[in-house]
Length: 610
Figure: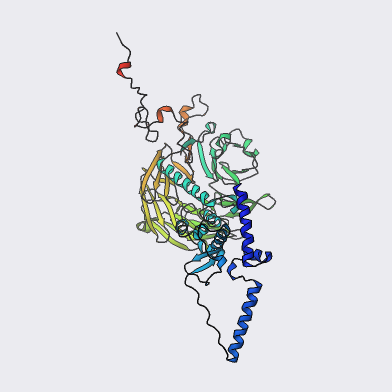
């Protein structure tokens, strides 16, 4: 009933308003659609004013009169006095006047002493961040409507990397969406710092000893001494690990060779065996390999880009690059013969269209391009390469110093793909740089590990070390960093998580085997402890008791920090309470004093014992 009364009252006021102004239905529609209704006038008013101006002009030309001065605009409004029907009315005014007032405030945004159209004001607000938009929303009602526009918050979501492939119509409120993502990031960072989450092991007991591990885009691949290859999807661990079958050449022999290297990305998985065979599987196709080829010797380096399907393998002095054509048929794109044995290989991201890979052989770093001879990027005689990593714009090369250059210390040389020249030389350490991470580091930063048991973060702009962390008992074997934390692994099997700004250790985990692989995202962390001894004495897989062999196998850990630990259904009842309660203890503190329930029975209710 109230809605019907409102409609009837609105119709009456519309009729009264049109009669008072004296405009037709067509002119009223034009008045509602115009962003500046105060400049519209009726035909009768326009004709009357035109006759008045013409009469005044004739008088001025004949000398009988003069043009009147233009009326000055009031300071209160830049456009002068508004007509009576556009002036603001009190709160208790008519409904139609309130509606017109709201429309005027939305179409024209007041900016100090002038009014701007809504679209132009929106262009200005696009340069503000979330804090500045919140402050602008407190200025006035018009600014609040503008600061909460969906287009502004949609662009802020995309700028922070949330829902990059979505459109503006995918969310009803992008401001709430951004707030939820930030709250989730805050919770995730707190879980990382306090080691709150779920820890699981990716195991394959019949695979014997773990040989190599690689992870990318939520997939983890592992190769074993039994010749088996396992692939896990960390987002769907309940379905188990699919078994990637080797090619028919590998299955003919009774004793299959060990797996020497494995690589994986979102498209394909690759494994190299001790006899030089390389198998390629599709992530979506199934367990059978889609391509395989063979080197004459053992594969010493295997590379797979983060995107695409280009595979580079090195055996001895030979480097071979394989990739499918447009029809999906695999072929050898390039093949190179170098002068020295290859130690490292990396696929360069597609910034330089002709460059395929970069390889390190002894003391020389080569750039490989199809149809050309290998070009030298770095070469210092008798100074071997200890580590290598590449990004879309640069390459980092760890160099070991010998002879007269030992006084200068071991260094990391950073080269630019655009110029092919050295950009900066980092560090002057007495120990060898054993690992370097450039592609996953924040902009203008590089993280490295050294045999002197230190983890260093370098600033590429100043060529200085901004953070030096000491916490490992042996050399650092793997490292990765983001904008606030560093994860490092050592030869002694110690995994450390550091906070970069405070240079403090947050927590650590220990295992008997060296940490050879570290890869983390916002929610998950994958680490691999790979034994150096592949055939331990007294540990045969055919023994009845496999417990004696488990300590020699190696371990893959998956840390999931997105698990809601507030739900304690998976925790034992004795581990759910705090010290403030009458029983149990705090699960996050540690199992220190697990005592049973204490029931305080009143003395008066105790049974009498004779």
